Length: 290
Image (cartoon, rainbow, N blue to C red):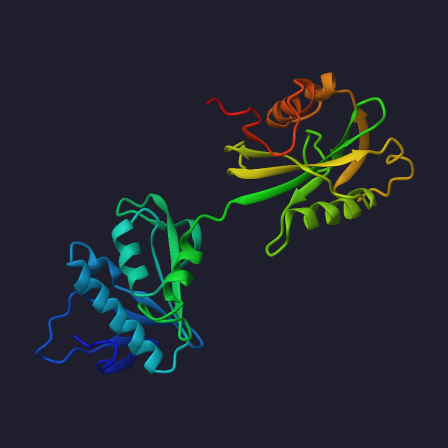
C-alpha cells in the first residue's frame, strides 16, 4: 500500500482520480478520489473501511490524501453518516477535520434520509503528528457553545426594561448573541447601540445561566450584566426597526406575562427572590442545588 511519503501511481477517468495499486499490494478498501471542483477532490468508497483494522484503514486514507496533495490538489473532503463513529475516527486520524452536518443529505440502504458529516483536510494543514495538528483538530471537534450577553436595566421604581421584538412573540432583555472573536461586554454595548441607540456602561456580571434546549434553540450560556438605573432611557430611544418594535418598563411581578419561561425564571432568581448578586450561577434560571 502506498505510504504518505511515497504515494502510489494514479490514473484519471472522466474527472475521477482512481488509485492504482502495485500488484504486490493488498488494498484495505476501494478508496477513490473523485474530483468535485478545481483543486478539490472527495474521498469515495469509504464504506469499504467498515470492519477493517483501524491502523490499516487510517493508513489507506492518509495515503490517498497525500496522493491528492502530491497531484496538486489543495483540498480533500469526505462525507460520512453522522452516526458512523468508526469512519469519523478513521478520517480524523488521517487529518480530516469536521466542518459541519448536512441534514438529511444521505440515505440508508432502505432509502430513509440521514444526516451526513463533512470533513476535510487542506494541503497546508499540519499533518497528523506535526506541531499544531492536535490543537487544530481539537478546535474543529470540541463543542462550540453559543454565548448570549444581555443587560438588566431598571428605573427608579424597580421596573425592568424589556424589548418587544419583531421576530418572536416573547419580550426579552436587551442584548444578543456574542459574535466570534467578540467579548460578551463588547457584544452588549454593541447591541444596546444598535437596538435602542443607548451608550451604557456595562457593570457587574450578575449571573451565568446555562440554558437547555428550548424549542429549536440548542443549549447556550446566557450572561446577564448589570446596566444600572436609567429611568429616562426610553425617552427618545432610537429603535432598530428590523428587530425592536417597542421597549417597556415592566414590574418584576408582571415579567412572566411577557417573556419566555426561561427568562421569567432567571429574572425571578435575580430580582424577585432577592437572590441577586455578582456572579450568580444558574441552570435554566434556577440556582443549582448542592
